[in-house]
Image (tube, rainbow, N blue to C red):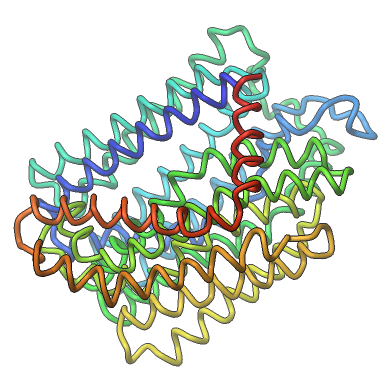
Amino acid sequence: MRGAALLTGATYISLLLGIAARKALALVLTPEQVGVYQAALSFVDLVVSFAAFSFTSAIINVRDNLVSEPLPNLKENVFILTVAVNGFFTLLAMALGLFSLSKTHGTILAALIGVYAVQRFLSSLDTFYTQILERELSYSKVSRVTLLVNIILHASSVVFALLGGGAWAIPLATILSTAFGYGLDRHYVKKSGLATLRKHAWRYYDRGTARWLWKFGTKVLFNRVFESWLFKIDNVLVAFLFGSFYLGYYAQAFTIALLPATAVAPIVARVSIATYAEIQHDRSMLERAFAITNFFLVRLMIPATIFIAFESKDIVRVFLSSNWGGVAEPLTALAGLVLTVPLFENAKMILGATLKLTEISVVRGLQLLLLVVLIAAFQGGGILYIALAVSFVNVAGYVGLLIYLKRILNPRWSENFILPLVIGAIVAVLVGFALEPALAKVLPPAIGIETPLVRIFLFGIIILAACLFVEYPFRKQLYRDRLAEVYGKFRK
């Protein structure tokens, strides 16, 4: 519990630092510059996604009592395959960057692709040492590295931008912080006396261990590829269809839309998966754990979705600046993404814990196909229609995942979805037709930051309170039970 708390604390501090840095960068960088580096990053991620065999996960997952065959020199073979596979796709991304996306800033884009390709390679090596630390439950060290890396990333990106770095500011800060994280993780592993690599690791290559690692990695590859493409292909297509200027707007909207998911990520990623894996063979316990997690996620995400949909203009003024007004429309259109990303992750954890990886890949693959078709069909509507397509695909994907999930447990439709969604819809109508017009007379939207800040605070409190207080009289006992269960967990 202490380790999870440390990681969660580091995550939230990093989130706040990121918000502050984004505000500073929005005052210095132009949409064109943001679009250029986002195009490079997205392109690299599409290529490097094919290296997502997650060999390093074997460091944590492989235990002597869980494998049917001995795996000699496991760490050395994980390192060899990680370097070989990621090295190949790094070079491939750099090579393809010389011939792709020539419509948008040719030379500088190819150079930025090279920078991000190297950064992703360093990141894969860093993950190797992070997994060693996590296997030994050295969460304090992992948290320390996470926090320091984010401080360096956000501080240096602002410094580089102020020095006139332009589109180079964030890529250079990213590779600098990644190199620092790699060096620090490697230092902690050696200093702690943890078992690490032997010298000349390639001499310890073992065919049997490598074969097992390939099988292990292939199980998650397609899911990782589909997921990476689903969240990056829209960026690349926006850059190709409309240019880097509009990608700058779209990428900022997408980043802000993911903030609620980032805020609850520690709960989903670090608490849910461990709990689900532990009780995967007990259907009633699994259903109960899912219901508890989903209870809080649904009741946080519905108000967050309404808030972002109606307050997008004020959010843009506060988190970016009035110069980024073009972000507001696509941000509102991404409301479906805001709602479903953390819910999808929670449901995905259930399927992953019960080894239903194929089902996840099928849903992600169909989502990707549908997104490409919708973008091709409605590209005439610009980035607004692309944002709507992304929202629709994410909502449809979550519904599809629930269909698979129903085979494992009862989703408890009434408790988890029907009443909260109905109340959310009513609150949204009241906000749109009553609260917004009334508040506009007292606190009209303004160019400055003071009035938008007050509006954001009032809207946030009112929307959250309305969603919870309207439901509470109908579900008093349920609320009490869920809060008592969470309180009991924290007291242990």
